[in-house]
Image 1 (cartoon, one colour):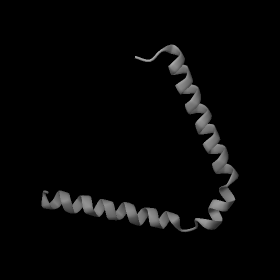
Image 2: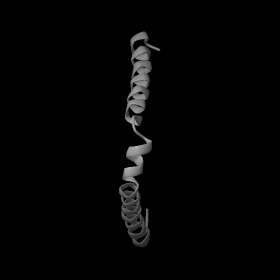
Image 3: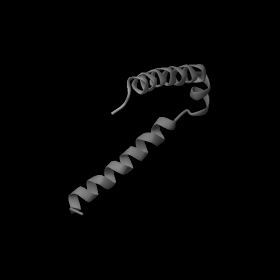
Length: 62
């Protein structure tokens, strides 16, 4: 389906891309701690809301 060159490029691209993302995250870690404090609670509330909607849908059988 894919040639050997395409597979090699895809794997190398994924490895390099993940490395750049990790480097950028670690570089900005202190800024994330400062400006996004409390964002975990927003994420948990959102996931709880979605879970609640799914539970209501499941219970009511729609």
